[in-house]
Image (tube, rainbow over all chains, first blue to last red; front, top):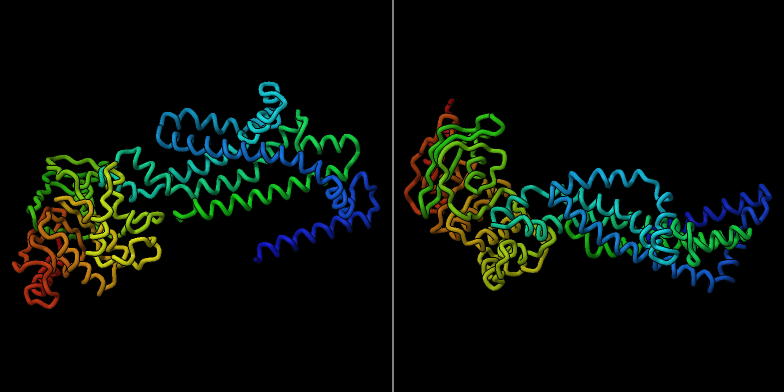
Length: 245
Length: 227
């Protein structure tokens, strides 16, 4: 378990640096709260943090599931149809040039202050990495496998389903791993723009009331949840999707 | 097949006249780049980008066994063998597939993944898959050239035995292989096909048989002769 040990060591290093900065500069605790205070805040506000974390994670998980499904389907459609490829790829690239921050207020306007504007935000942020990495993997299918399938009398749809898709699943998995890290960012951006629940909302609220320790607490809870989500997705991918490698 | 082929305007071969003898093994030898593989790809219907000018009497659906096994790494040995049926949307016959795997001596490896098999075993899975296709015409593209000498000899014998009665086109670099397995032996040259008399004994022939050794020497001479 060298991975775990390295993670713990890195965490300790950050904590030591954090505390050293506070000791050497004597910075006020409402600007940079000491680690011990943040830990105490996390413990004292555990019910509050959990309540908001559940909302954020629900947004993230639904966004992740929908984004992955949508990315899966669109990558296959793009590979199957050259027309779709010619039409949609420039739009996809253009969509990445639009800062997602700029979209958040519009999404809130269209979809309201509830879950769906945040889910959509998470979906938009992960759609491109998922689609793009799965698409690239689908386009790289071993020509000889496709040739063999043709000789066996397969039509393009079956070649797609039985050869190209399974062969490209590791590519889909690497898109999902990225998505697991990006999706929380999308949900938080959505919450910053307009929400009444969620860790992003809690951060803004705490910041506005100069409760920096609570803001840090929310941030740490979010970071830990993201790491756990990434680890879970990673494990799932290793078990199910990486078999073609 | 009668005609000429070119890729992007570069001629690969011209005025080739190749007819496969039904129910027998035709061996095609020749220097690299002379177009043996193109002939095979034309028969298989895989010649994308090749311009063929002439008459090609398509053999219908064919089965193909190549130098590399092209097993799908995510499918078990059994699933690889029934892949053809899956790809055609037919109901796969697992019992027959198990029998085929037993025929190639892999009855104990049915549920394994290809990665856990040796090169020779993987090629035997590919052979079982080829048998499963049950086509009248079988195209072999140097199927044994990546194997070690001993495995190669065994595979030659096994393949000859299991593909008996089918029309086989074997593309090979190896004069010994042609002498052991060819019922018609053709050398492909830029100016056309040269037929070399094949031994008349049934295949697979013994490596040490005098007619095999003689045919092998003959083939070497033909291949080394300046064009």
